[in-house]
Amino acid sequence: MHDIVFLGLSFDAWITLLSIVGVFLTLLFTKTKAHVAFFCVIALLSVTGVLTIEEAFLGFDTSSIITVGLLFLVVSGIRHTGALEWMVSHLMGQPKNHASAIVRLMLPVGVLSSFMSNTGTTALFKDVIKMWANKLGMAPSKLLIPLGYAASLGGLLTLIGTPPNLIIAGIYASNSGNTMNTFAPFPVAICCLLASMIVVILLRNWLPTREAPVSEMESDAKALSSVKPTPRTYLSLVIMMLVLALSAFNVLSLPTCCILAAIVMILTKCCTSEQAVKEVDWEILIVFVGSVSIGTAIHKTGIDEMILKDIFAYTGMTHPLLVLVMLSVTAAITTEFISDTACAAMFSPIAWEAATTLGVDPMPFMIALMMAVSNNYATPIATPPNTLVYVAGGYRFGDFARLGLILKLINLIITISVVQLFYPM
Image (tube, rainbow, N blue to C red; front, side):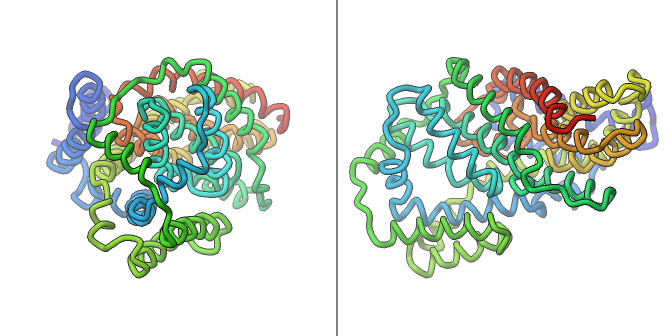
């Protein structure tokens, strides 16, 4: 049955496509929880034989999933020592309006994400932002999507801010023999970050209002009013800063830092082992695993090869700018359905080959590809920062599309325009 081919697609490919369409429609038009929908996809792909059991649960072996799971343990110590409340009271400030709050949020998060994993930055700040929003008297959903966007955009500023940048830089280095500068993507990325901030501020009314449970909001308000820092409050903050510093300067990997931090948090009684375990959000992790399973199925069934096979057919591989546009647009669309890391691995050899075939400098193609594979703002499953805020903010699946599609288009235009100024072909 798996050998049956219909309209050029195998049985497994059709099952994969129907699964993708099914989960999107379910989340768009029903109130089904995201983790339930994605668990059903994992089950369907494994039961039908599209994926083996090992492949279906491959997501649990990815560094992003492991990192997020470990960060929950670190956040437990920060939460239970009152450090979250301290950060809200002393660092976030009291902006006068929603626009000011977006600026105070997106700029520092963007800068931090340029040196630390965008996933780690989002995981550490999502609870701070929820508490801050409640203190400001606004729904957390008004700020959590900007948090996810800022983390993703900030990660593009340097090569170390996001895994796709490292993958693409690695392909460039292995093929050219030259090492790409750490700040090579900065000129294009900073334009995208600043433009996106302006768009989010101007279209802030498009950010949905999704109320958090009343009990949670009351608990946050009570915590804020009764915060009394203790030595463990400051200790937990020091531990968090060490996690950021050691991972940012590549002294230790982020997962290793998180393991050590969690152990220290428990040994110093910033939190108990029971509190740390309870902090793990399994719903978020299941959504992550489900999105990885979909990406694995797309690759295994050859859907990605089918998409890429005729990508340059319409350009005739003759005009560099037209090829660059086609490559960027296709990567930006594909990255909404598979992980940005997988998208980078899939497209970077194609970008290099396209540039060398055309006889032009590959650098603008590689920089444009960095922006394109991380141009994933329209769905909550396209990138870990989106997924983290999706669950934390109580959003609906379609909430990301309204503002996300505008950002996607604007960033594509900025990327194609600015990359030619700094890296002419």
